[in-house]
Image (cartoon, rainbow, N blue to C red):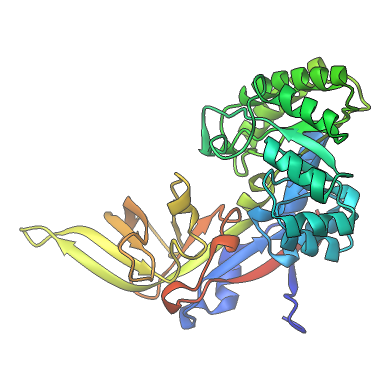
Length: 396
């Protein structure tokens, strides 16, 4: 790190996690290490352009707001989905133009709206009449993007209970209200839920979006922006390909007019697979049965649900650790439980695992931990959050 700015280390061909571990001397450190491969973001962006060529990705800053990541995405030319004044400040601070930003939070504090107005960030979401009146008072020149509810049947984090109006009952009324108040509705948006695993969900949502566009145009609004939200999987490219196929088919059918700008809010898609967390076992406990044989091994590691493994607590995900032992032949495995470092009894990472008999000082890794980890991490109980080191391929 130079002048407080993390340095990017370069590698040839493929990032070797074992080599990074060997060079980092993690056994002598108490702090876990987060290894972030920035080239993974480049590969994901190329995949996006290949499979969804008409849709402009706007990186969801809330997914991982590390300044190095945000600047990297800005340099790649993506748009941005911001949800607060501080996220706007960060993105704008990296030279991103306001036109590349959507203020995608339907219920924004007044001070945040005023900042958006000062910075000329005109596109923002809204989903109820109270927010329409708030915009009338504090940012009447903004472009209202009407957010409606359309959830996937399978998603890690459903959002419909909190945000989104009813597409049939509420959307026409809100557009009529905006017209009566001389406000501009310029598009519509939805979010099927974070971590969507149902590729038909986007087809249902796009059918609702088409109807909202038609009603808006009948009312007299100039509708030219469609935001299909996020929810795209980050570590399952086969599922993403199925989703992209459904989206493309539905877009071609329902929004053939190329003048309509279509954007999205992917976060997990870019970040999930970009990071690997390496933790050290600092304590161990054996649970034995009445015969004295090992029944369960418990391992206590230096990161947990208050750190970069928060996703195991907040989302219904299962993380599978990998070991870095030098094995000449397969080792016997035992039922194992992994605990985080805090005193919280809920700070349990995984259970019902079968792992080799590990020792204090051994390292274990967790892949696909780039999404919704760093922003949630806190030094609870006085334990440091993991250090992040950044890597990038010399050439792709």
